[in-house]
Image (cartoon, rainbow, N blue to C red; front, side, top):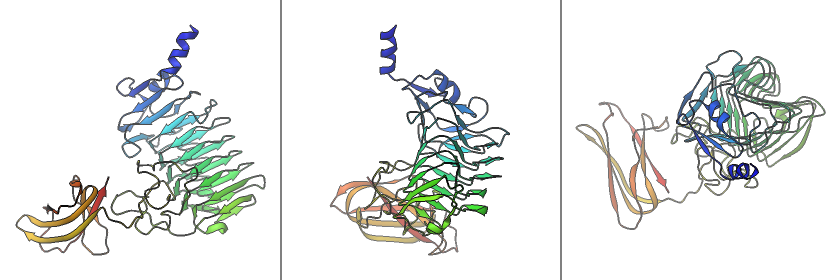
Length: 398
């Protein structure tokens, strides 16, 4: 019997949802330590897909294609959140790549983490959740969860900690984006009774508190906070309360310029963002929330998304022109050389400085690395007669 148990632990299984088990909780129930519950794309709702519990297991619950396509929707039902951790989970209990939305619970609208449970949350979006108590997004009590590459946004609580509520808790946050959360005290984060969170490579911006601490409120003098390489709205003065700032180094106070027009991701960093390459590589994850490598440019970015600040081009572009055609606008361009060129996307705007929207349904494939000129074309069939347009070409390298 002992030999069988050892063999089972050495041969970790992958349990697919919904192929092997119909619901996420059924997948967790079938898993043993070391297993992975792999969840396909989709919006998961109702019994077995909300109020989920790891039950103390050292397993990984992971989406196939990330948070953008795998959603746990609590549908704003009373006393309904996505996850409850309270059975001694450690960092080996991993939640990876989900959007958690529309939770509605007394404490921890999206996720509740209780005494002696410290899971790992990575590549997750925790958004639009509501708490009638504290912790609109996440409630941490006597725990030290690890959060990397997470977006915590637009969560609301009646009392304290719109994004994260810490009570005798010391979460470790690296490369997270915490924005547009709202509460009474501590719009972004509140540190209550003997809490000591450590925050690095993170963005705390545009959170709101009715009383004090829009971004961070260190409520009691027994609490402290360490913030480094982070964009904090209001700077050090924006961290309010009676507690201690243990370390405040290499931080900035600048608009992060959310909303990259080329990616369409709400909290992706736009061109020229001061958060690009402003973080530290020490302890940073190797990829961002959507799988881009870190660093992609000269240094690691702050926040959940990584950009490339390298000005060198993968292509030498000699021509980019547009002419009116019977069926729309015909765009043509030529590359004189290409280096690791995966392909192109075309974006369009009605004004030079307006919002550019991608109009290519799929990537126009490039020629990899080549020193021979290549000609490309694309017909914009959605262009309207009598309207002026500006076009932008985006190159994607390998």
